Every structure is written in C-alpha cells, then in structure tokens.
Amino acid sequence: MKMVVAVVQDKDAPRLSNALVQEGIRATKLASTGGFLRAGNTTFLIGVEDEKVEDVMRIIRSNCRVRDQLVTPVSPMDGTTDSYIPYPVEVQVGGAAVFIIPVDRFEHF
Ligand code: 2BA
Ligand code: 2BA
Image 1 (cartoon, rainbow, N blue to C red):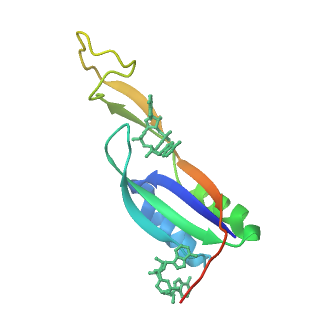
Image 2 (tube, rainbow, N blue to C red):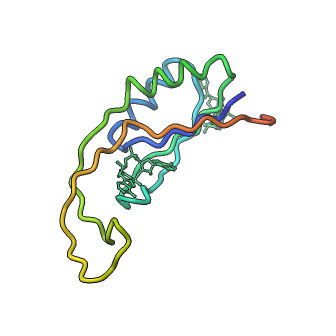
C-alpha cells in the first residue's frame, strides 16, 4: 500500500475530490498553506493499493492545472535583507506536488 500525498491548488480541489469519489478512491482533504506564497492550498491524503497508484496519478494529472501567479514576496528570494524593495514576480504554481510514501501498515477500525 502507498500513501499518495498531493498538494494542489484550492481551485482544483473540488474537481479532484469529485473525480476520486467517482472512481471509488478514498481520500482525506486537509487545508494547508504554501510555504512560499503563504496562500491556502489543499493537501490530499490518498491511501491506495500499489496497483492503484498510477490510476490516482492519472486522476490528479487530469484534474489539476498549472497556473501563473503574480506575487510580491514578503522576504527576499535570495536571502539578503539589505535595502530590500519588494516587487512582484511571476511564479508557476503546479499542477500538483505529489509524494508517494510506502505504508507499513493500515488498520481500519
Ligand atoms: P470520508 O471520505 O468522508 O468517508 C466517510 C465514510 O463514507 C467512509 O468511512 C466509508 O464508509 C464511506 N465511503 C467513503 N468513500 C466511499 C466510496 N468511494 N464508496 C462508498 N463508500 C465510501 P471510513 O472508511 O471509516 O472513512 C472515514 C474517513 O477516513 C474518510 O472520510 C476519509 O477522510 C478517511 N479515509 C478512509 N480511507 C482512507 C484512505 N484510503 N485514504 C485516505 N483517507 C481515508
Ligand atoms: P508554495 O510554497 O506557496 O509555492 C508556490 C509556487 O511558488 C511553487 O509552485 C513554485 O513555483 C514557487 N516557489 C516555491 N518556493 C519557491 C522558492 N523558494 N523560490 C522561488 N519560487 C518558489 P509548486 O512548486 O507547484 O508548489 C505548489 C505548492 O506545493 C507549494 O506552495 C507547497 O505548498 C507545495 N510544495 C511544492 N513542493 C513541495 C515540497 N518539496 N515539499 C512540500 N510541499 C511542497
């Protein structure tokens, strides 16, 4: 079994959620915050049998879009703080950041 951890944009979360339910795949949604943008995103925990992992990846891929976002970083991106003037930069936000973690044991009481 694997735990698929997928950080997705809030805009894509309802669609992804519906698609997973439609395909009979169980998941838990957590409200999360991106460390860089400090804006809300959604983290899906999806526990699945190994042979379903590729199905999950396909569902995530087809329901999550890459978007460009203009942001004004609250601190300098190069780490220096001297005479820092914040200016907007464009960043490309995934799609999804997906981690696949082996599950030692799954119990359901
Ligand atoms: P929910 O997804 O809100 O599911 C609540 C209950 O609805 C489930 O209880 C199950 O009895 C039923 N259910 C869920 N998905 C279904 C489906 N596709 N078809 C038919 N019935 C479905 P539990 O299985 O005890 O799960 C309780 C909560 O634990 C779930 O809330 C979910 O947040 C989490 N969970 C369960 N299995 C998970 C998994 N494999 N990966 C991640 N989270 C899981
Ligand atoms: P955020 O941390 O808010 O990052 C949003 C986007 O900003 C990132 O998109 C990336 O394009 C850019 N970005 C992030 N950190 C940066 C930095 N230090 N310098 C320049 N640009 C930076 P994605 O890579 O698609 O990530 C979207 C969200 O997925 C992230 O939100 C974070 O919540 C999560 N994420 C991405 N990689 C992760 C990782 N390795 N571990 C845990 N969470 C991760």
